[in-house]
Image 1: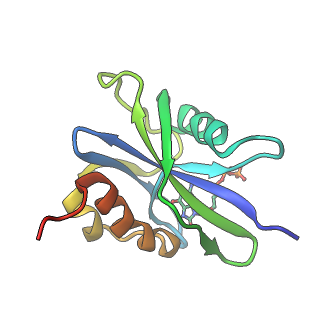
Image 2: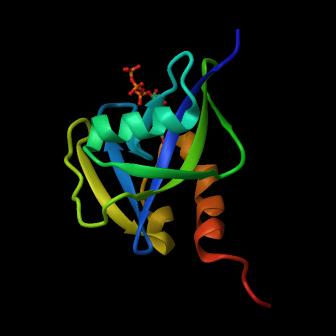
Length: 132
Ligand SMILES: Nc1nc2c([nH]c(=O)n2[C@H]2C[C@H](O)[C@@H](COP(=O)(O)OP(=O)(O)OP(=O)(O)O)O2)c(=O)[nH]1
C-alpha cells in the first residue's frame, strides 16, 4: 500500500518561520499541517489544515523538494507558504505552543525526527546560495 502523505507547512513571515509544538510523549516541534485526504492535492490539504489549526489563510508555494518517511505508513512533504494577510495573528487551536522563529535559529528547537532533514533545505530556500 502507498504511504499516506502528510504535508507540513513552513509559513514564512518577515524572515521568521512558524513552528508548532505537538504535545505528548511523541511530541516535538513540527511544521503545522496534517494528512492529505483522498482526492485532495497537497496544496489544498495544506491550506485546509492551516485554516483549521491556526485560523490563517495562506498562499502555498514550492515544495522543499524531498520527502521523508514517518514510520512505515506516512511520508512527510514540506511546502513553503506565506500569509494572505500579514497582519492576521495565528490562533492556537491544536498545538501546545507556537513560535515565530528566525530562520537562523530553527535548528535550536527539538523537532520531530522526520522534520530535521528539512531544516537545511528551508534555510537554503530562504537565504539563497552563499557567495564564495
Ligand atoms: N503536521 C505534521 N505532522 C508531522 C510532522 N512531522 C511528523 O513526523 N508528523 C507526524 C505526526 C503525526 O503522526 C502525522 C500527522 O498527523 P496529524 O495529526 O497532523 O494529521 P491530521 O491533522 O490529518 O490528523 P487526523 O485527522 O488524522 O487525526 O505526521 C510535521 O512537521 N507536521
